[in-house]
Amino acid sequence: MSDITIDGKEYKKNEMSEEQVSIVGKLANIQQSKNNLLSQVQDLEVLADHYVGKFKTATSKEIEEKQSEQK
Image (cartoon, rainbow, N blue to C red; front, side, top):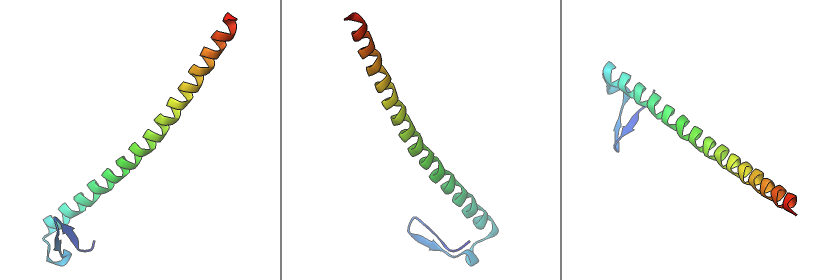
């Protein structure tokens, strides 16, 4: 682990207690989890948009078929 900056202040690892090093490790894990979740949300938004498009296409086809049957 290298030095870390929190709220604009830089902290050196070699000056941290074991507890502080442990806390920084937990913070790093939390930040990584957050980044992974944000990436997953973006992927899910793309997937949801895709299925909205598929639904609209299927709905349009169904409407066209019903109109063709009525003629």
